[in-house]
Length: 250
Image (tube, rainbow, N blue to C red; front, side, top):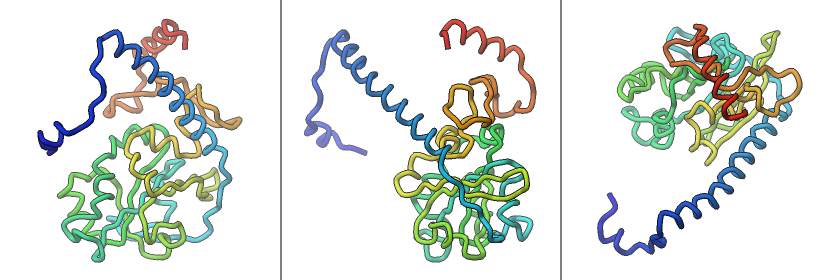
């Protein structure tokens, strides 16, 4: 906790009137909107990255035994696979995974929203399934699929010495492509629905996005659901969205 002495020694900003504060905030809002537009443009550029076909049959160990990379998609079109450090060479083992990777796992939002956009999030480590299962129970990460790396996957995809998110796409013939990769400080912002979708090939799949021709899109907001009612039509919510869109002229 920051001490009172440290707080007292801080060089603090000016204290102003409500009117002056509002003016300062309006000036910052211009920069905030610029940042949002730049972030959207970056995500649009990611959707136009070339793809790399994955030609090896990578094998992982799951709770039910051996599985292939294709199985990690769980039948969905996209896979975000995070390499988390959890094995005997990692500080905290076996009670804990890497401190930074654990902080990231604590940030992961409810996975049903990702699933609704045809996207699976999974973790992979060198630790055994027995240890991973114990770790997940202890840390409250039961909902995150977590696999054991058994071959050269981590080396081949740049995550043998450092953490990172690899993003994959499964096409209509079950061919797998690597579409994006993010690591280092890029990992620290991950965890929210939007942060994951914005690094995928399909993006958020909403009608306002700048995506290549033919990419799937649905009306913004209408696909949103409470996490326990996905798969059910909600006409009342759709009508509320339509009314809001007219009012806001979106």
